[in-house]
Amino acid sequence: MTERSAWEGNWPARLRERARERGYNSMTAFAETRPTASLVELAHELGQGDVAGVQVFQMLVDEAERSHQLTRLVRGTLVRELWESIPEGWPADLSVEGQDRIKVAMALGTWSAFTPVTHEERVKQASAALLTNPPPPGWLPKGPDDELLLTLLPDEEA
Amino acid sequence: MRTGPLLVSVALVAAGCASVTRVSGQGMDLGDVGRAVDAPVPARRTDRIGAFPPSSVAGPERASARLTRQAVIDTVHSVKGSMGTVTSALSGLAGPGTGFGRVNGVFSRHIVYASNQLPWLHGSLAGSMELVDAAVGIGEMDMELGVLQMTGPRLQAAMFGAILLTAWVDFLSLAEAMLRRCYPCSVEKLIADMNRVQHLIEPSMAALASQDSEQVEAAATAMPELMGNLTREFASIRNDVRVAMERNGQVMAAAQIVEMVTMVSAMKMSLARLPGPPAAPVTLGAALVMGSGGVMAGSRIVVSVEWVEMVRRLVQAGVLSLPAVSAAVRIHAGQVMMMEANGDLPPGVRDALGDGPEVRAMRPTGKAGAGMSEAPRHHVLPQEHRAWFEQRGFKGDMSIDRFCVRMERADHQAIHGGGNWRMGRTWPNEWSQAVMRTLRDAETSAGRMLTRNEILQRVALLMRRYEIPMKFIPGRRG
Image (cartoon, rainbow over all chains, first blue to last red):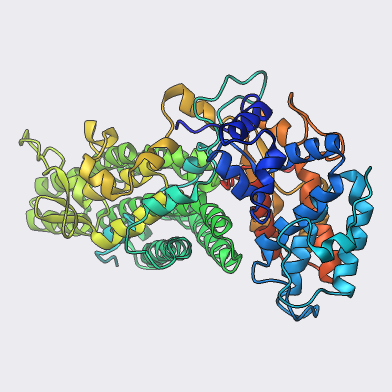
């Protein structure tokens, strides 16, 4: 059992080092090259078994906080959640009885949980808006600069 | 009264949860934890796929959950089979017109003791099947396997409990035959013998009935040695019959009784390996090898290829432990005497039973290995929201107390947003909050209550994000 725990040792240093080894000077720069990858996929690119997706996310939050890019990160997080939960795109049938609404609901639930406290209210409203005025079927944003996402969650930060 | 196939069914034995509990971090409940040599192993799906036979190519992940589920079901059915045999033997022994009638209920407490084991044995089989059903349709392979692994302790308890009960019923049958047919035999000595044998059996039976994973594992791995002792006791009582009846000139009758009880005994194989009187050479069995028909001792099939296949799946999926499975093979082969009882099986047989790097890693080695099972248990589904989960089907065998993981203190602190490396002020990165916000907000968006399976599926995704291994152990309500 040579595997190490993701939580062992100074994990922020480990993550920064792994990103650097791959030619990125920040976690944000690394993540932006894979805007539709899930957090777990990002983590596994940095290390099998000793990097957790949630750690990648925490570093992204940390960096976005300092660069005042939190809203952009929040949009980017939804992109990853949607690709992970509804890779076939936004469903046509959102009825409560249908099979697909739950997938969207789960994606939005995890998005909410992976949202900084500063953005909780805006995410709540954006989620409600997506369900009441749903995007066209098949919609699957390719990154944080998606037009619809920018309308839902425009940058406010200076 | 009794028929032969007991041996086949009772040997379908294996063990469970210790393999699960020992796979994650080492550490102690109190005080500082040393740095992990055996750090928590995340459920590495790639490893598991690799460990399965190449036959499961079409969707190996789906296949392995499906095959594991089938192997659990097959095992439950086989134990049920041997339980059926035991139950009918018991009702025969408890009925009118048996040899026990001669001694006015002196032996009835022994029969009652046997009958008293039936409810918990049936209960653990039923519990295993409930978990098998609960694992269907979660739609998340690791989580399905995690739920199937929960069957381990009770499956193992039932399997070894059935073996032990079968052996005990053999003693009851022997006593009954002796009372019925052997008038010169000493009833007083038989009473003393039966008391002593029941005392031999009781501690192991109680450990199995507890269904506590560690106790069950210990009882299972010690079972060959116990079966060795029981074999000697059985042979000794049988010998008393022979001597008493021969002294009385009833040589043929003696031979018949001895033959009858031996042929149907679960200890038939080990009895054959006892040194025969007087001072006959020890019958050495052929070494066990993995052959085309299964595990072979010489030309005799000890366990079938099908059994090996079933057990390998369960060992590799972490449902059963290799030491317990090895103990079952030993018992089945009758290799329960002295040195044989505790030795390792030959490498070829071990490999066939699913031994491999991943499985070996689960095995405790010395103190460090034992320490791994001491790492604190933690609820995956937050206890302060017990009622919320109960409303969504987390009750009984699927209560939130069944979904605990062992984690080292430092790791546990880290996932609860503590530890030395806390970063970011605006996102707490706290496990319980992440779970509850995900689930509550998902319900809001879904417009309905989530089902248990939907919850498990999402929790599996979160566990993967937090690198929490999907190896569940039962925890305490706290």
